[in-house]
Image 1 (cartoon, rainbow, N blue to C red):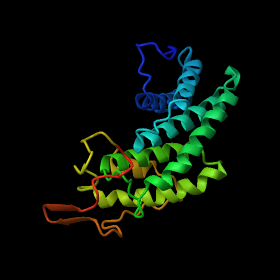
Image 2 (tube, rainbow, N blue to C red):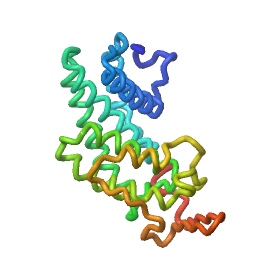
Image 3 (spheres, rainbow, N blue to C red):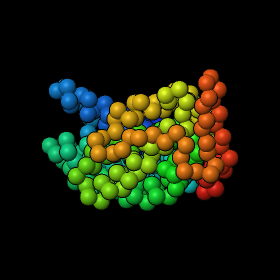
Length: 232
């Protein structure tokens, strides 16, 4: 899609734009791995839409939207920089990736609680956030500014998965969660790179969240805040 900002046929709001860019890069990576050509006009469209996103970061929405904004910029910039040299997009790609990296380095420490849980206290958003971190880790393994942060984040985030799940990763309806909107625990653990501990906590070191299973009974006790005060 080579539409320009303002064309009503394309969603230009920052969050759907972020999700589109993330999925475009995933799709493009699969095509490239299979030796298949990218659609005509892919690089100009990717660059145009990523630049538009970089000027419309969702500071007013905050929360997981900012993480999605950052990840979309990182993935788009990385793909433009690594695969778009012949398209003259490598410099723009580095600029976009650096913008996204700065935003992510700011948001991860702010949005992760002390036990590794995402601060919106939603199992769905926690899984989505973990998937985003795995996407970024896959393309920034050689970035010294990101490697330590990713490793620390992924260790805590993946260990927390088991504490908020039942029956091997089934959805738990807590706060802003909806079934089948996020990867399962097993999917995420298979995606986790070597060197990151994937030992799941059944009861994290938290005074407010407990998951108990006895026979056919499952009890999730969540006495934490509904969500972070800084998210509208």
